[in-house]
Each structure stands twice: as structure tokens, then as C-alpha cells.
Image (tube, rainbow, N blue to C red):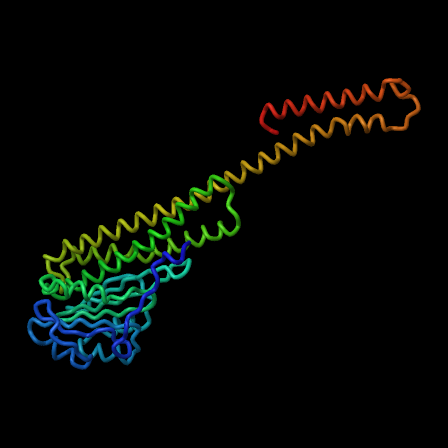
Length: 338
């Protein structure tokens, strides 16, 4: 895999310990950058939306955020420990959503998590592990105040859509490698290193599928379950994310099938090559067996042997050996063994 062409893990400046950005929006426009301790007072004002982004916060910071928005203890515990399965949970009028992120790190896929708290007048994102900065999401939303003015559910949609979009660069690079492997497999049997790489690719794709799959149910619930903080006008947008996730699933399944076929084809190619070698060895052994047998017979030290005292015996035997060997060589060559 060409590492230079890979999507690399990106980071962004942290404004304070664990806090990437914290802002207040009115009618889709940022009106202030705030401290975490000010979030509750801003959020309580009508028409104001607080959008906070955290990166691997410690428990003290999470506790401060919990106090500002009255977040559920179980959700905070999940956000602190990470390693959660993608899911959506409802705590009163608030939602807690977990999504898995993925990026290429060297020759393997690195996974991370994003936890989203969504409620009346706020959205808090918490990122752990490998993840692209959500700064482009914020910038894109701020560049279109009319869309951002829709509120918290639009921010939720924008982040989920960004997470799903970032699966595509990973799959594109893997697909290029899989296609190169597929083209090479018919030319020769795979080496041990290639087989190990094939196994690692299939393992990473399975892990990616396990990360992507549950997002279908998350988006389905956002689309159909009339959850709090998700207005009916936003449901078509979540349907679009669902379709995108399913497309990613299909791409992953297709790549895993191609890798399986490539491995099977490599085994068949190897068997064909081994069979061809066995045929050649068997042919030469049969040819060598003729002079060996004749020489063995006439090499016996018996006194009374036919043709033993014949003047032209040597030339006759050599002629028979040569004729038999040439005949066998021609026959094996004709049937494709040599």
C-alpha cells in the first residue's frame, strides 16, 4: 500500500485541556465563544444553541459538562470509557449517540469513537482515538447560517454524515490494493507475505463492517422513531445518511468477497503449478527408468546370459535405450507433460 497516498490521522488545536471549540449560535450564526461553565446560562436563552466539541476529555471535564446540561450518569460513564458499540439511547428529552470512526494508520485501519449528546439548545461531541477533526463540519455549517439555524438536529446530521463520508477514503485505498492483488493472483501463486496481507485486509474490513453496521439502526431510529430533538423535516436527511451507510456496507462486503476469491484462485493456481511440476518429474523419471532397467539387467554377473557374447550386443542395447527414451519423450511432450 502506498502510504504516501493514504488519509492520515489529523488533529486540531485544543483551545483548553480537552476542549476543541465551544460556541453559541443564534439563527445559524456564532455570537460568542464560551467557557464550559457558561454553557447552561447561554443554552437557557430562547433561540440559542450551544455547540461544544471535546477531544479525549478527562472525567473532571465530563463532569463539568454533565452539570451544565444535566446529562445522564450512564451516558457520561460511556463517554469516559469509550470502546462502545455504535448505538442510540434516549434519556428523557436528550439523546446519546455513539458512532465509530475509521482512518488508515500505516497499513492498517485505526478506529476511534465519537459520542454525541443532543438536547434542547445544545450538542456536545466527544471524540476518542483515530478521528478526523470536526472543524470542517463546523466551518461548513457556519458558512450556511440558514441550514445551521435549523438547530441541534441539523448539527447532529452534519456530524454523522461527515463520519460516514470519511469511511470512503479508507475503502478507496483498500480497493486499489485489492484490485492490484486480484490482478497479480492469476499470474502466480501468492507468497507468504501476500497471504498474510490478504488476511490482515479481511480482518480490518470485518472490523470496519462491525463499526459501520450498527449505524444503520441508529440512522433508522433517527429517521422513523419520532425521537425528541429530531424534527420531521430533518428525517429525509437522516434517510440519506442511512443510504450512504448501506452503500459503505455493500462496498465492504464486495471487497471481502474479492479477497476470498483471490485467495481461492491463488490456491488453484498453486495446485495447477504443483501438478505441472509433478507431471514433468514423473515424465523424466519414466524416461530415466528405461536405461536404468536395461542397464540393471545386463549388469547382473550371470555366466549364461543371452547376447552376452554377441559382437553387436552393446550397440543393439544402446539403440533400444535411445529409441525407447526418444519415444517416451515424444509421447509426454505431445500430451503436454513436458
